[in-house]
Image 1 (cartoon, rainbow over the protein chains, first blue to last red):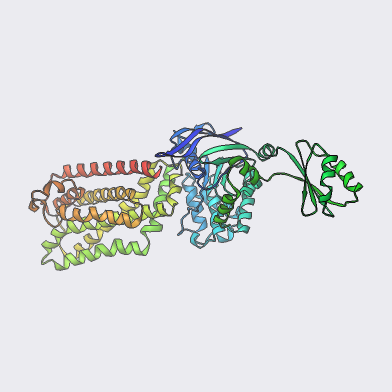
Image 2: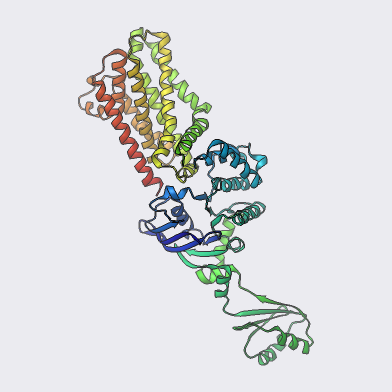
Length: 321
Length: 244
């Protein structure tokens, strides 16, 4: 069932178009990833979806509610975790959660019970009385996610949830996201970490220059990029002298002999390993390993968007994870 | 949804996080105490104290409300915690009322600092306390909404404070607090009548020593008008500038 439908969504600032006629849907119970480099339009999109900015044009429907006309009605159903923690430094973890619950009209007893539950669920129960300003970055992010979940939203918007966080906390946050989703929360996740999107998301949309250039499940995105089948053999010896023989023996295949005692077979069809194994056996060459080479999501992203690996790497380094 | 829960919790949070903090208490309470002492001790007789009381009350309310509101709004905006309020399912008018009621209450409390001092130093009998209270409330509301209007225009706390001074200080000299409007140069008098504090001070003067210039009902009406207009302009600017 579709929970969020976005049609021709556009945001312009003067002559600059940050989001350009974007269309997508999010199904109930899925994690939808919005993947793109910095400045691609991810945060501008999330701001329009959550009511922090007004679309220049287009439509957003959340569970049948028109978010452009009735954003306050829609905001009851959504949870938001911004890219930077925006809780109150002076208040402790428990007070922050309890205050956030009050913004959704929850009565005192109910909001205090819910705050306690979430602190426990997010592994912060020992720190509930600590002021927010004394939290580590990872703890701050976890509490901000808990605050986004305080009113049991139908959909949770997570904007770059692991950016600027150390590896261990990033791992814990990814686990939390998976658990929240397993418990039934639909998640909209923006990230510029490809491996994070690959690990967490059911479907991914690539956004570049304010436009969605591709949407699909990981399998769909991979299969489209994988125009050929590649099998790589790791051999005992270097076999450059056999390249011609191999090419003559297997005319339908493109064969690369690798420097490090390996052979790469390219084919538009699925590669049957047995004829190759027999060939190496006949030539008394021991095969240590044979593996199917699949393109990574990073390669797919580069192929689809035309954005170089260098730029992505720079952004990853910029993320200071 | 029960919006009143959100309203009271925003108000309560602001009181705890900002208004009840020692630096703000010192600004809010000690500042009017200092003014009251400064003016009253220099007065030659108790009549002077009654004469000065409207001015000191108005100053305490004006500075208390406008100074703290810029802190609560611009500071929260800078730290992005204000976004949390904008993203909550609360009507923007109710949200801004919740954010400003703390400043209004703070201004009203400030007003009583000079009154308490004056009570020890002068005879305050014969004062129309109902009109004094009405005037204090309306000055607090108008000043708060003026502070809100300025804060929405500014990006930083210091910017809001600076802009506030452009309004506060000319207002003090033109509203008849220290120099009666009738004694101001003719060219400046029309400006006096464009300032909300002129009407607030005039009600206080009428209530305390009976020498106000403007009929009291006109002053109440004009102050209410200023409050509504400033609140409307501010919320419109918030919707325009902060939900961009």
